[in-house]
Amino acid sequence: MSTYRWARWGDLNAFFGLMLDNVAVMGILLSAITSGLSPAEQAAKGVLGFTPEFVLTHMIPGTALGVLFGDLLYTWMAFRLAKRTGRDDVTAMPLGLDTPSTFGVAFLVLLPALQIGWDRFKDLEVNARHAQAMQFAWNVGLATLVVSGLVKLALAPLGNLIRRVLPRAGLLGSLAAIALALIAFLPMLLDGIAGAPMVGMLALLVILVTLVAHRDLPYKFPGALAAVLLGVGGPPLEKTSLRSAFDPFAMFAFYSMPSEWWSGVIETTLNRLPVVLPFALATVVGGIDCTESAAAAGDEYDTVAILSVEGMASLLAGLMGGVIQTTPYIGQPAYKKMGGRAAYTLMTALFVGAVGVFGGFAFITYLPPAALFPILVFVGLEITAQSFHATDPKHYPALALSIIPALAALSLVVLKNVFGPFAVPDGERSLFVLQTLRCLSNGFLISGMLWAAALTMILDGKLRSAAGYFAVAAVCAFFGVIHSPLPDEQIGLPWNIIKEVGKPFAVAIQTQTPYHWTIVYILMAIMLVGLDVVRREED
Image (cartoon, rainbow, N blue to C red; front, side):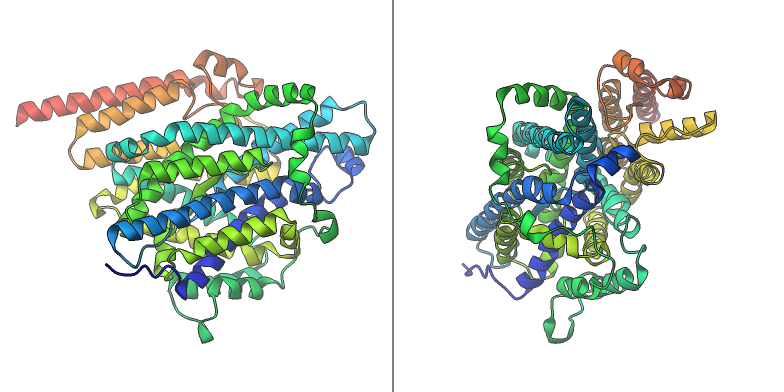
């Protein structure tokens, strides 16, 4: 039996990659929900945001503790796997902050809750009103994360069953969709790499050379760190005071809230569940994909254990005041290629946990996005490449098909950033296009997975199995889990969903209600069964 070499030189590069990935996600949250304007100026413009100090002292510490807990457990699991298999090249499963749901939490939970809080405390002076609104929105955010953690823990025991039932193309296709359409592309666009090409593109080149092509820099200098150092010449985020951000006990303020505050938080949290639950389910599917990806790279982890740690980490983060859920990263094969073993997750856990709790992440505000975001492009490229590498070439069309719903989600993100999250276009044609994008994008992880799984079965000649996946899609469509016509991933019973569609979109949804999507999936299933019957008779 070989001695486990848990710390290698490659762990240093892997550490900077994983650590900076988490830092970049925190940077996304900070840039998405904060405003440098005073409360009075925000009120005058009708666009509310959190102060950077509030995010750094209230939301980031608990979020960082979730990463600390999860990566420590994944490090321990790597030691266990090495001992059980007798191998010395086991790479720990990386855990970090979930990028797709960060956008969802920012735009669909925290900012709407901030507006609710602002309306609730309208009798207060403007500064006090804004402070109370931020406190309220923070509590809604952490409460939704607690619910998300509980849901993931409940679904964890089903992980191995789901992995056995779904084909690999279906599992990996949904992750390839996120990787290419969101993780790799959005950093190019949103105040990022292409927005400051003199900085961002040079930093991206370093990432491509070192992490994608696996070429060493002189003196084996870590590529991820070199990219950040190269990118510091870009325009930074809104700066904040390091002193004001240093408040390690702010996360415990939640427990001193009066009991009547809880009632308001619970009510608003329940209203946000249609947004939160799909993201929780998506990370469960993602965790299964990550286990599949790691297995393809040679490290066979138990799916239930991976999902359970993910759920516990999210639950702990929420209880400690965090707002972003944790998830295992499918980039495990990439960190394995870097030469990472178990030391990189241990270092990430200790760094993110210590720096996050004690206010050190204020340094994010001094870093330009163009310096942080190239690491996300690497992760996106690696996930996409690994998804194709681990899939039978015959099933490549299924992987490509799964990306289409994610492109709709990408289009909506871009439109919301350009025109605002609540903008309604003029003209019947524009309304129809926007509504169609909503239907395609809502639940895109699940619809992409089901589409890919069904096409895989069709390519293998298993038409009845493909019909089964479309039957599942019909059930999901009926409840709005996929193709909901409502904005922001909202689900519910079809008659309630139709009632909630706003007047401007009443005409646009006439041909794409939950009933239409449910019926068409049932018809697709029936057609496949019929084709299978005819084929068998001909044989």
